[in-house]
Amino acid sequence: MVRSGSARVAAGPTLAVVAREAGVSVPTASKVVNGREDVAPETRRRVTEALDRLGYVRRPRFDVAKVPALIDLVVTSLGTSWSGAVLHGVEAAAHDAGLEVVVSAGLDRTRGGRREQGWLDKLMARGSSGVLFHLAELTPAQYAWLTQHRIPFVMIDPVLEPPSGVVSVGAANWQGGVTATEHLLALGHERIAVVAGHQHKMCSSARVAGYRSALASAGVRHRPEYVRHAGFDESVARRRMLDLLDLPEPPTAVFVCSDRMTLGVYEALVQRELRVPDDISVIGFDDLPESRWLAPALTTVRQPLSEMAATALRLLVRMRDGERPESTRTELSTRLVRRASTGPAPVT
Image (tube, rainbow, N blue to C red; front, side, top):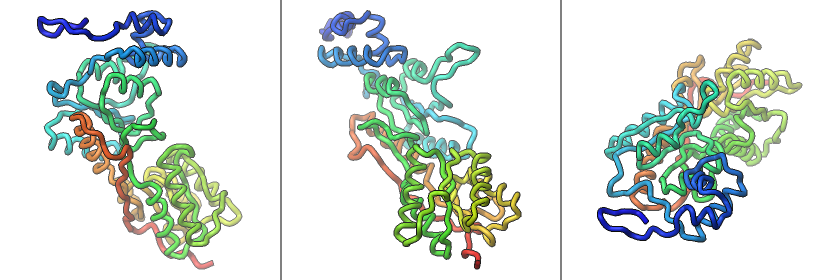
């Protein structure tokens, strides 16, 4: 039973009944309901099935009529211009919607051997009306916790493919890879390499797929040795570029799948005393402020980071108000930004 004013209303089976049905203790059933991760997968499955079978009513965390004007933004890091662009987009859209934003850097962490209070705990304490996740990798238990507590959330540029039904906003990465490669092909390059990010992560694999598609459409042979993964790390990108330059037939152009990695690529080219774009053309992806600071300034594919973040905020507000987006995946278009780092293929 739950109390509402002075009246009592039926609230369905208690947690003790659910625990008995699932063959577990009440504390274990409570852990599942509250999204705790220290529960075996099979136990979690039994409890979840019992919850659904018995019609256990999880108290809605967010009463739309009483929600505070507050949303949470969880980012992996605050120390990059990338995260700065996302924060700008969220803040601007939140201001228009009359919302305040609480920013958390990172998910659950430990310090001194003890677990810090993570974003799940803080979210419960604050009573935020929804969550935006940027480049976050959530566990199945965390997804389940959000769903069980009826907390609306949207992923901004998810690293991995989200579970079915999860709403996300990203850039047209495949088309961006096509655009970058077509630009180099139009300049007469055929020996085009790619320094990619993580091999199995969404944005990176899509950009490489776009690169390969553009080569195929132009009738240019794809060379597996021209594809190198650097995990979005500039020091690794420098080493991968040196490896490419050591090939018997090195590339005349390189598509670098993030502006940050081009810093390492430029270092490798300076080390080998190669000129950009006279000896080799370089094109990036993102259009971060750093791309304009390089010498020569970087030709790149712009992805609209602030617009992606603002779109995610507006979707979250609609979901908080009971609407459901027509599509779970929203992609914003990318575009080529031409600067000085790309030029005609050298005559050989």
